[in-house]
Length: 149
Image (cartoon, rainbow, N blue to C red; front, side, top):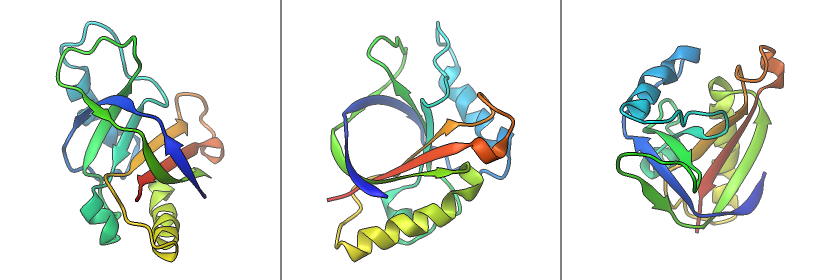
């Protein structure tokens, strides 16, 4: 776990609540992001889920409040996008996927409290290695970042 400066990035998101209980649970929100796009934009390491500041502060990690897609400069997306500004985050990478994330959120929030930081936005949880690269769930890697001040 460490404090990192996250660069600004352009995102698009679906602000729907989502409980991930299996691999296919994230598919429906992703279909909403893909609708009417001229090119495929859904790639490993670009799709994430987030928990709202309110739910993080309440330590309610049972559902996600949004699904997002990080866009590269060259990505053409027809629809509304948002720029997330550069921000300081408490961040952790762990072996596992979304199903194992709640324990990591507990660790991150403990760190936030111990260091007298304040959550300043929604979390960014991105699976870096999952079924797109391997069927071995022991090799999955996920990163969670929580913006703080």
